[in-house]
Length: 124
Image (cartoon, rainbow, N blue to C red; front, top):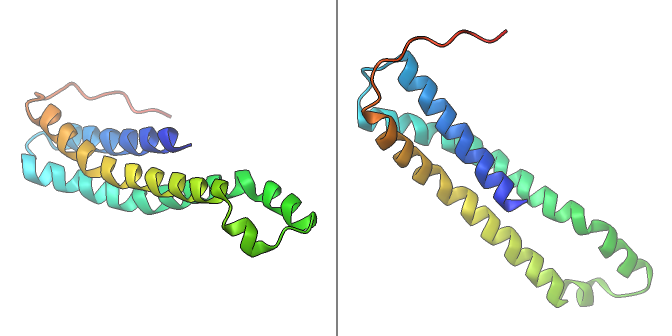
């Protein structure tokens, strides 16, 4: 789930920056990167929440089975697999948060010297 979220976020930022450069070829490097960072900031929150819900939803049934079998909630929360899932969520969120500025910077550098392109046909 984490790698998909990271790729989705990176593509959102890169596509938005490509569109910005296509619409305004004279945009400066710093302003272009700032635009990418603003797009990243807008998408990062929802992507992190989606990642949290995906991890939680994938294990909620297992938690319910353990609770139905009489395992106390305190014992369940101290189980090693719960710590592993919390670590998964933290690492995944860290990946999502760090990919946004990295993608904005790399896309800004790659698109910096892109010359004016012929307008692409609009999609219906």
